[in-house]
Image (tube, rainbow, N blue to C red; front, side, top):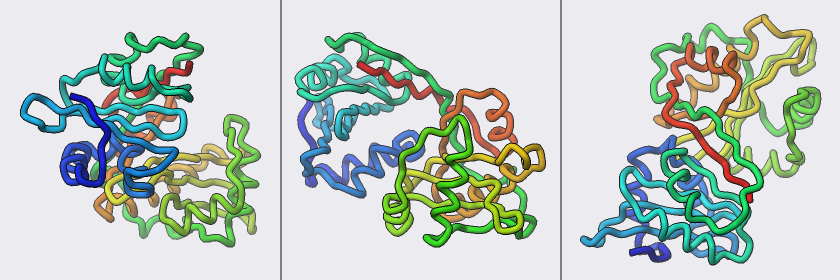
Length: 262
């Protein structure tokens, strides 16, 4: 049986999602930030015959994200999506979202599949004492972060100074960086941080400073600090060379993250 979730379902919902906090980064973060009663956010649960929750689906704006650790009513979730008046995207772990996709009655415009990796320990990480040149950004560094990102060809970001400041203050994001003569030359950030997990994003280095290990140092410091807080880290990538760097830091592929755009 599929029905909308409310605050009364919170404990059961958290028990299910917290079994895999990295895999459920977005759902956990949005529940923590916005709860169950918002115009732009709705959650559904799939309950088995014993009324035990076995799957959750989040609708945030125009995007649906389903999650299930095992079997679930994929067709039932698709029927919820098909009834939406502003549906544009289905995304999630490939083993889950690919079960829902065949029942969607909208025309598929684009599909993208990325590697999805997570790290839940710091055994492969160097001591943070070795990275004294890596700094944690604050609001006074925001303009430099935006300037750095604007010089990275593969980055597409429209995040404003105000948005980045708000997310820093809420603890949703943080950035570690390295400077050279007052110029930010390399950085790594988190996004969608919640009490259990965080996503690594924005790993970059200016062209003139590449192959010096700067991005690896920023990543190592970021990962060490976040993992020390008891959180899991996750990230997307489609570049095999980037994957080699992440694996050296202790990330392991857990699935693919697939986005179906309609």
